[in-house]
Image (cartoon, helix red, strand yellow):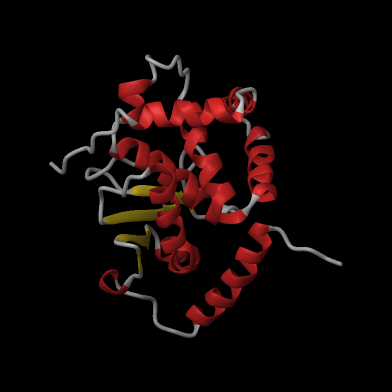
Length: 214
């Protein structure tokens, strides 16, 4: 019997939502769907990327509430921002970026074939920044790059949402990236015992204090 993976089921539902959305007017900023009090408004920098922005928005429309709930379930903390602008455009370095809480928008590659995983990845960076976790903990825990900290959260969030096979696919995909940082971070993570990952994440969360809106 043919079995679909977690990501395949998500994308099957996504395409149904996407083509339904194409029959409707593009939502204005005031009409975008919120995911459990977190609103993400995907905006094309250039009109030619309107479809790509709609793809991102459709994914957030369908998956946003589940994603936000997963963050809260795993960390015990909410997102401190209620609204985030996310720009869709070309990126100079070929990567998407999480931006900075209350200061700068997120930036997403228009040509990404991994839009949903990218949303979760960049939101994990954003969440970490919202609570200042990298600055407060990387020296104390001997973390060499920000993706080691990210993987402590990202792994559990993807696994809880889409299953074991989906998170394995993410590890394989990111480990093949041209940047060695991704592979080295996942190797570091996978060399830890599961109970040690949980303990470290719990200890790191003890340092969480929200960044203030300025």
